Image 1 (spheres, rainbow, N blue to C red):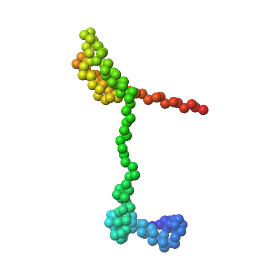
Image 2 (image 1 turned 90 degrees about the vertical axis):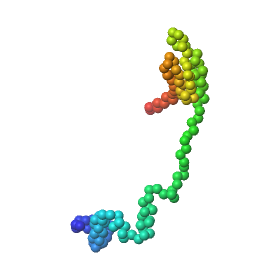
Image 3 (image 1 turned 120 degrees about the horizontal axis):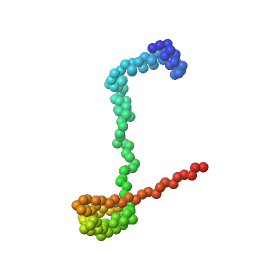
Image 4 (image 1 turned 180 degrees about the vertical axis):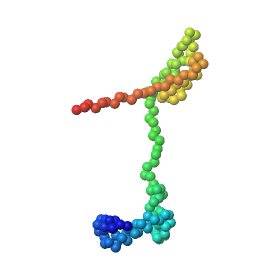
Length: 140
């Protein structure tokens, strides 16, 4: 404890010299305490309970006013129609010199993917709907 510390406490907190010295000594005692038990030893049972309640990070008292729900996607009928049309007409496609037709045609995802086999190889067709390009703002 230095004279500068005492003077600083007196001016900033507007307290007497004795109060400043007592305050600095108490601060030093707290700084020397090594465990929480020593700090809590001077608290009453009610104060310890209040301290524990105040430092809880979760509480039964505070419930969320909202619930997370999985957003239901609206079906895209246009994409479904395109996939169904491709799947129906895919068997009419003829490939290679021997005019082989695709086999095992399956709609894996009604709005996105069709799988099929041709010449012993597995293929898939994926439909992508592109978003409209963002309009660039006119600079003034």
